[in-house]
Image (cartoon, rainbow over all chains, first blue to last red):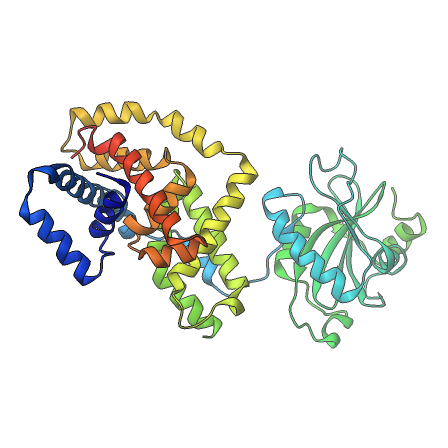
Length: 234
Length: 168
């Protein structure tokens, strides 16, 4: 059986021959000429293989679909982007790029935070206006597009602060190298008046993260002013 | 087509997306990761979807690309995993209990995993998913002749592993 013949036989088995070619091929099979034994064997085996493959994967169609796949189709709920989790980091970069571009925070992506704090994790240090706001503004105050939320001491001993921007909310902790952005949560279409008030709600996902991180209560105004006076270092 | 309609279309396709993924990735978890990645990519690129063209082919293409990215990222670890399963051992078992559908299925899936990536995708799209040559070739962005030749080589390899190895 030459190459052309093999391709024609394959096309026949796969239902790819047009009506005329198909009829001619079947006539030849039916003629049962001695020289065509190889051809007939090929067709038979190729059909058998198709059936085997079909049967091998058919049960997948009846398996219950995992919940996470249904969830993937739901409109996105707000979701904490953990910069430390490498699997999620890729999603984070896309969002981060958008955030940085949209509010011109001047944040530099990709710097390493000290290896001691987050081994192997990509780090993001706040720069420019975000860094300045974190350094100088107290809770409820704002600077440019950034307004400050809660301040607290994290379990590692660092001061951490939550902040809001036009389209996101985040959490940054003061490490030796500067303010390391630990979390970012996209917040879509937050009206400006929302986050300027003291009552502005933080996204629940971020609040959960703060609760998990904090060691003791959030700072009151006096404690916050004292922390700022010491440059947010302990 | 609105995004909501796209979501509905994807939900309806889910069983087939999972089946196609299973021909690419050996482990069920890996396959479902792949489906999830493809769904997320499709929804992010919803504006690129052209109504009137086949949604399944679009998703298969996205999934195939996601799979290639995944393979590059992990440096062909999947092949090692299949070797660990020991396809030869499976074939032996198949020889001993031809009536066991489960073992036959496993043997077929293991044989598929041993095909070169290009042949496996061609076999999967045409022989498992039932796409026409033209549709599969367009999806893979290759000429039909290249597709049918990959298909023929894939078949030959599978026949050697399975049909001629007394699985029937």
